[in-house]
Length: 400
Ligand code: AMP
Image (cartoon, rainbow, N blue to C red; front, side, top):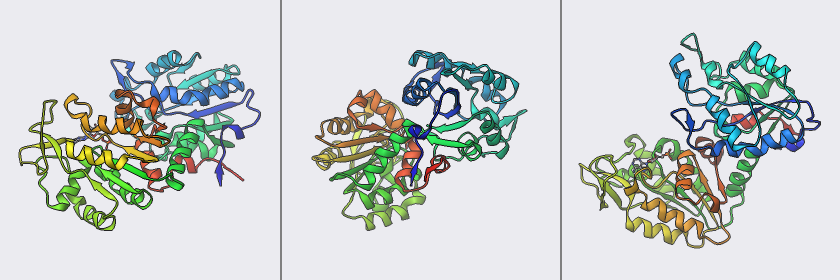
């Protein structure tokens, strides 16, 4: 069974197409600091415009828990960035529903774009947390669906959540499809795990251990090696009886780590040494295998780098999620830089980097153009690799 894609939507001319995009971009002092997610959504938007549809964009931005949050989380600055990133004008309507929105839609010309306000503004009403968007309120999904003829979901980053602006709209609209970005995400991630070119190596770093510990099991079933580094590895170090000092770990997951180490003895490669420091600060650190009580590991050490380089030699598929050190700090980028260097020099390999932090890291290291695919969704790509169904994609029409 295949999901409908943009090419399956016929007679687009004059149709009102609601497009869920992921414009959840970083903003500082009212300015977008990284427009990668906007750029990633352009192929879908441009295709619809070329076919003379009327395009209505919906996106969330950050979390809205109070009326105060709304002051800094308006999509207005994103709309301004959109006009710079694309050649198209956009009509931003500062409302999520009601007369203003409906009138603006009535006045749309074929091939034009409008965007409504942050969908999560619907989570707070009169300063009370109602979560209409985030809890997929039926009425809200139905209302948004009533504004358009067709729905396109192209927000991979939120596809693992059932919200009114993805699952809700899809349920009530006549016809729905996935956009080019989601299509590309599915293709890369699906192909990588279902028919990987071997050797297939997975690299798991970052800080959110509980998010990723389940994916280890799924990946270890398919990959030839699963390499675990930085904060991810300290829970395993605890399981081995190693000292980790003040490093980030999840002691309640030690039993699970033990089970995984036993089950996948030949596949798991766990970082051995770390660069350590007293405080979470960008100062030069020292290398340890057993970390003294007053120190914490913030990067992988030279011995681990050597092992990883050896494992990556000749790899044909590599999935990398989570930086292998605190790459925001200049002193703790060496491990990730070394991995990045190996990855871009692999011959005929499919290389995939997943997750917001990992994507930012790849951009900082200037390797984004040399990687086969950089996934726009951290949580979504992890759940996809775990084999879970993503509600935002499941809700879209199938091709019969
Ligand atoms: P994640 O979202 O799980 O991929 O985690 C990414 C974050 O992990 C980045 O902000 C890194 O700075 C952080 N990180 C990587 N290694 C460590 C470490 N050893 N200790 C603390 N944080 C880390």
